[in-house]
Image 1 (cartoon, rainbow, N blue to C red):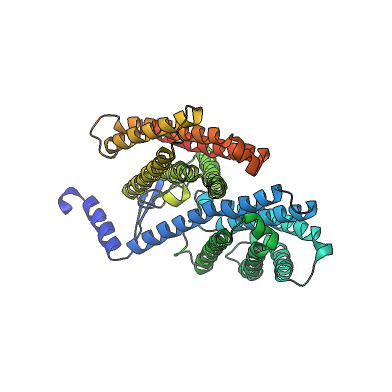
Image 2: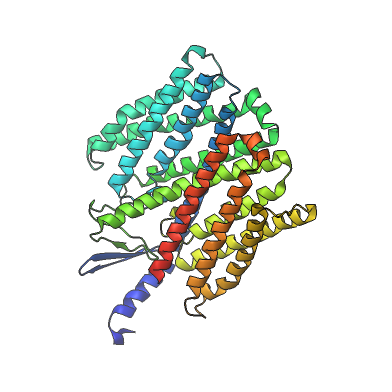
Length: 474
């Protein structure tokens, strides 16, 4: 193997050391410095599982958040109580959870951030969390009594205030110095109990009689409890990984890179430092937008599933899950800024894409069978767009093998074009279904407007990232 120079020996060493579970490291110095690190199979599986676990938690985050927002929009409680629920929900679920997860290198919204960027985002999000939590607690201060919800909320706010006071000391001091290490550990000692108390306080609202009566079924309470438990455990796993890698540069996934340089992660964890500040900012903003899209996708899905359950119109739940969950995540699995798919190797991304698209087809066909059995097909824009979406789904699935194997020139371009048209058609079909009077009476006009804005936001983002991928491949 050495007849052609030392390149085959380098490749052999990378592969053999990877199979032995030992990370191989190579540095190439030229116009740019490239460090090549081959992940071991154990590290690769760990990164993929943790990334997928966090992405699912972020997607499910929209379920309890939007459920409580729907509850407050019914105005069954006094105004200050509704404000208390909204502010505390924002504090715990919308700011505190992403603020903790952003420090984990497997979090999609922080995947492209440098170490300084992650720490700043953590400081910013936790500041919003403390502010909303304190204001929400003050609104209910005259009505405090010795209940589990109030006691847990009091200690959650108290610990969060202590953690916020110690936070700047951990942020502005170097972690390599003694004071910096002590500040970070003390900050974490207060922040972890703050999150635990706040999460338990948030979960106790599901036992409130008025909330249970509004839901109409106790089974949905169990679903919300299970979702919150999953999110809670995911955050604890992220904290455990952060504590385990704290102060150990050999295990940490964070790489120190100057602020004017871009870090790019590919199949073999190649960290390339190059002068592209604009590309770095674009990747960060797009990754954050995709993270927000996951939350909005969860909000849209849970709203229509609740409506379908109450009105016994199951076809709306089937089609929503098919195109707003499986199809959306299938497209995002190939996106360059989707956090949970970034650690996955290119071929494995394609396998995930195929699996999710098969789930899309099966779920959509099941919904179509329900419509056909109940003879609900009408000559309306919603029905016509639904049939068009199914035809484009079939066409997209037929052109898929040409994108997987380059049998036909520009086969991937044809498949992506059919996929974009199919996804756009499904989103327009969903928006036309939201304007039905029955749904407006159940949710209210304002909620329908919000759902349409959510759909337009994440649909536009998915289409834009797909077009960028088509242009780059071209």
